[in-house]
Amino acid sequence: MISSLESAPIDVLHWFLGLLGSFGVPAWILAIISALIIIGTIIGVFLSLFALTSVMERKILARVQNRYGPNRAGPFGLFQPIADGIKMITKEDLVPRTADWIVHFLAPVVMMVPALLVLAIIPYGRDMVPAELDAGILYFFAVGAGTEVAVFMAGWGSNNKYSVLGAMRAIAQMISYELPLVISAIVTAMISGSLSPSAIVSAQGGFAFGFVPQWFALTPWGFTAGLIFYICALAESNRSPFDLPEGESELVAGHLTEYSGFKYATFFMAEYVGMFAICGMFVTLFLGGWQAPLPFLDIIPSWCWFLGKVCFVAFTMIWVRATLPRLRIDHLLAFAWKFLLPMSFAAFLSAACWHYAGRGPLAWILSLAIVGIPYLLLGNAFTNRFSVSRRTYLFSE
Amino acid sequence: MVTDFLKTCCADPMKLIGEWFVILPALVLLLAAAAAVVMRNLIHAALLLTLSFIALGIVFIALGAEFVGFVQLLVYVGAVAMVIVFSILLTKPDQLTKSRNLLSGFAPAAGVAVAFTALAALLGFIFSSPLAKKPMPAPASAPVAAIGEALMGDYVIALIVLGILLTAALVGAAVIAMEDKP
Image 1 (tube, helix red, strand yellow):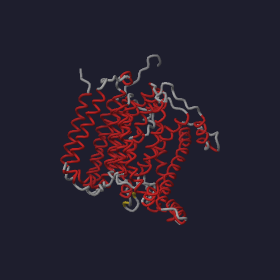
Image 2 (cartoon, chains in turn purple, green):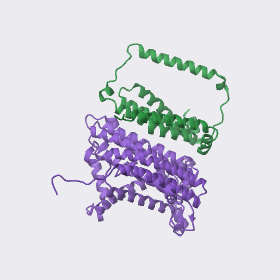
Image 3 (cartoon, chains in turn yellow, purple):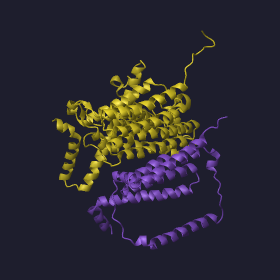
């Protein structure tokens, strides 16, 4: 029973293909059909996750801000995504007269493509990788680079000063945060000796002392790299506190200003699917992928663990959004270049020392020191610049 | 003719599909690159150039050079295209749409003729060279691990020299961009 749940999705697929095969469908058509079924399932799961998150995010934000949130459409406002979808589809599609209409039209499409493509290499469960690639992590970042082109197209094609400003900010932010993101991901590849996500997941298998999972996030270098990856993931998916490209109070909506109706919805969708993809990558690289946190919890199927972890990471992202105020653009870029990048190098060195010191107690001390000392020095250098002086009020008191 | 085509199709359809995975992106690559040269609108030209970078990456991947293809996408789409786009964004907008034609009359046609003559001559030399007469080597599979070992083993000095060169370029850029202290 338990083992059948574990491989249930694959078994269903094989049963269906076997059924088709018994009707005499040639093998190459079967291969195409099986690929299409897998693609359809992944897109379906992620789009329904997107619909669910769009309402959960508003609910959680409302809870944090002490209000109700959406509660009119259906029980607890659960049908809100349907209402939103109908609203988005029936809205008028406005294109500014001076816009570069081809670029304006293509931008949401180009935005959606990388968001869906990167889902191909994430290991969703034991033996459940849609595309087993040797260089899976490289693929993830290579395809993700397309997002920047889409943001630029949206900003330029709209022919609006707020759009261009927003796009420039977004691209500057994405390029800056991509460096620490990639370096912190490379650290895990270095330790597990492979660029393939499934190899990295299996390198995190097993339990120390019989109950402590050997996830990379639970080592000094892994914790540092994981935190850097998480912060950069927030910035890459343009989420608060790094959502300045769309800062409503200063830029209207950045590169999305001139979009309405379904084009806007496509952007929104791509952003959320991209967020889930990068959460999935974070879980794969640092939180042990589909592995259970405790040995006896293995009875729950691996893909449930993966989905649960991804949802938890997405929840923390919403939590961060509700808690932290937006940064200023120069602070944001300085934070990436002057703090995150050196810290990711430190994590890199720390991981190398951890590996060659034998991964024992000595390795722990060494790698803790290599991560900790730069953190203290850099942190001091950063906080000393902003000395808080007593505020004096001219017209009150 | 058609039945022959269908026969080859059904005999080994995957191979046929695999061939089209190379031919189609290659066509897109050529068309996009040509259009990028001809386009008057600079932004459209830059975006078409980006499309040709992407198509080149797909050609590499379809030919089995996964690593090269991914690096092509990562470096050219993620970095080079963005540098081009940024430099366009930072120029004056009225220079973008009205880029003057420097050559007129017969000059463009003569330029194209010279380019094609040079290309034909070089292709002739290449195909008559002893290298072209060698038999085609068997398609080599290059797993990422093997590329990594080659880079860190036999070619480690070249890799380090490249790294130093890039670092020097980065430091130079930082020095140029640095504000002069009064």
